[in-house]
Image 1 (cartoon, rainbow, N blue to C red):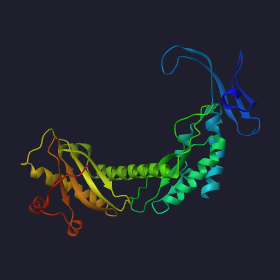
Image 2 (cartoon, rainbow, N blue to C red; image 1 turned 180 degrees about the vertical axis):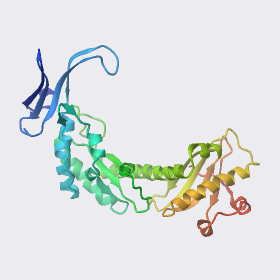
Image 3 (tube, one colour; image 1 turned 90 degrees about the horizontal axis):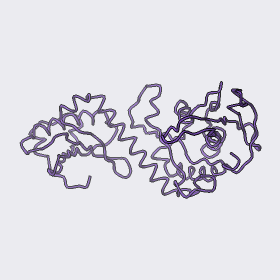
Image 4 (tube, one colour; image 1 turned 180 degrees about the horizontal axis):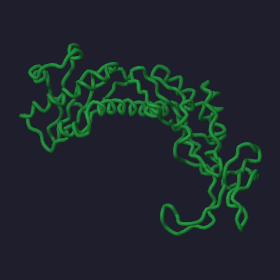
Length: 315
C-alpha cells in the first residue's frame, strides 16, 4: 500500500483472527490516524474470470479519503455543510460510498440554470483543492422549479448527477489522473447532464400517463424533449415504432399528437413549441407547430392535418 499510494500507513486495529494471524486490519495514514479503513487479504477465483488469485490485498484508501475530506471541501467551496457520513466499516462490513451518498441528499451541491456559471467556477476550484486528496468527483443536485414535484422518499435521485473533474488520462505514478478539466469543459458536462435529467423527467411523466402496452399499441417508440441552449423552449420528438409508414396513416399521426398533447399539459411549466414526429425508414419527419390556443384544448383532426408540415432538421 505504501508503494501504491506513496505515503506511510499504521495499523490501528485488527479483526478476524485466524491460524495465519489476522485477515482484516484497520489501517490509517500515519499523518491522518483518524482516517481509518479496512485492508484485507482475499483469496479465491478472479471475479472477472481467469486464474485464481491468492493473498490479494483489498483496501479502500482512496474511497476513504472521499468520506473524510469530501464534506469539508464541499463546505469550503459551496457553503454547503453535508451531514456526517457513515463510517466505512461497522462490524467488519464495508459500505459503498455511492450508496451512502444516495441516501443523504444533503451531500449534493445544488445547481440551477441561473447559478450555473458561478457553480461551475466554484467546482473548478473544488477540484483544484481536491487534488491533494485525489478527489475528482462532485455530486450535484439539479434544481428547477418547472420540474414536477415528486413526494417519493428517494425522488431526489432523479435530479442528481456526478460531475467529473479530471480526464481519465494521463495518470500519475500512483494511478490517479492529474489532468484537471477546464471550466468550459465542466460546464459542457453539466449542461449535458441537465439535459439528460430533463429528458428523463419528460419520459417519466409520459410513462405515468400511458403504460408501456398503451404506448406500444399506439406505435410510439419514444418521446423526448429537445431544448434550446438556454433550456427555456423545447420541441417534443416522437419516434414511431412501425416497420413502414404511408401517407394514408394521418389518423395514426393525430393519435400520436393527442397523446403528446396530454404530456405537454402535464409539463405546462415548460414552453413546448413543436411536436416533431419522426417517421420510420426514409419517410423523414413531420412537425406540428403549437399555437397559443393549443395550450387550452386539443385541436380537431382537420386543423391538425392542415398545420402538419414536413420537417428537414438534423434532429
